[in-house]
Amino acid sequence: MFAPLSRYPLAAAVLAASIAGALAEDKVVNVYNWSDYVDEEVLAAFTAETGIEVVYDVYDNNEIVETKLLAGGSGYDVVVPSAPNVARLIQAGALQKLDKSKIPNLVHAWEAITARLSGYDPGNEYAVDYMWGTTGFGYNVAKIAERMPDAPVDSWAMIFDPEVVSKFADCGVYLLDTPEELIPAALNYLHLNPDSKETAEIEEAAKLLKTIRPYIEKFDSSEYINALANGDICLAVGYSGDVLQAADRAAEAGAGVEIQYVIPTEGAAMWFDSFIIPSDAPHPDAAHAFIDFMMRPESAAANSNYVYYANGNLESQSLLYEDVIGDPAIYPGQQTIDVLYTTTSHPPRVQRIVTRAWTNVKSGS
Ligand code: N2P
Image 1 (cartoon, helix red, strand yellow):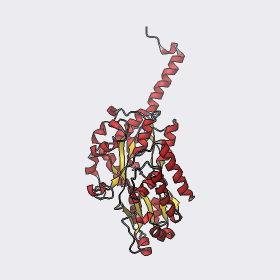
Image 2 (tube, protein in one colour):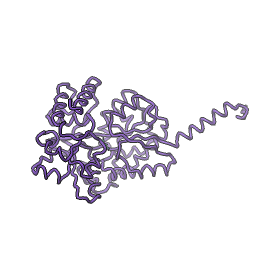
Image 3 (cartoon, protein in one colour):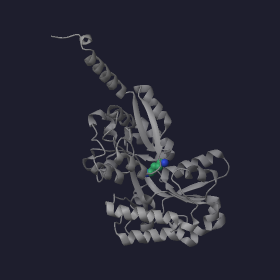
Image 4 (cartoon, helix red, strand yellow):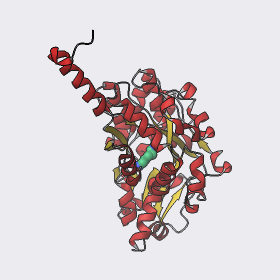
């Protein structure tokens, strides 16, 4: 017989709480993404359409993401780590498999990028590419020319040749604050495998970084955008879209600062940042809804048009501004893609060596 709930106050309370819980589940999504990596109007459009509030938090390196997700209980629903970190997080059981039935816009995913990602996430079960890009450097055209008219502006020698970079120390040189980018770049400059797992080779890369350490003003992965744009620094190893945002901000300010992004001829890193859902995400339904919204061609295009990074959404390409899809610094042609390298996650023993080498580089010891 069907008993009225009021006769069972506890059951009624529990039921009411779980209904409230189910409803609450859909009202908020906690997103943790890289800084300067989204068009906020897309977030507002998501909330307007779904009623789900976006609580948006930012980071500027993978190390902090990995630490938080491995510890568990981060409270995040959607996070956007780079591919080697995704691979490690999958192995650690820190991520949940995506329910692809809840992400119909996955049909727009760009197969060429999905295929690359499957090297880190076999079967593409856990991760969906958001953006991808390269790591090169940005420079202030006038300040560099003033100091070195014949500067090798297309080469990593700008950063790794002490004779060259020392000439720019007075106008400000920043390096990204992560061994994940600087060790591979140094290895590549030394004609070694940028994805090397060899202790001796990693030590060699660290040695090279130590020789240029005196000319580095700061290790930084987010402030360099404005620092370049304002003319406060003249050279920075940085991510493609970040440097292009700096160039754009400089042009808009109209103070005569011209910033150029370079994918050096020796090659550069190509990386992929993907949406994942932590295994203990508090709002998995909202997380899927969010990823699905971001995978709409209109959303992906709006984001790329705003942040100057290439995205993983094929359908969005017809909606991109011509100066985005047509800019080889954002969507490089095959000739450039051929000199781009990718990196994989290190086994723990190698990771410890990298971490220690990096600490020494930074401290100058
Ligand atoms: C955004 C940087 C994202 C690129 N500021 C790092 N993979």
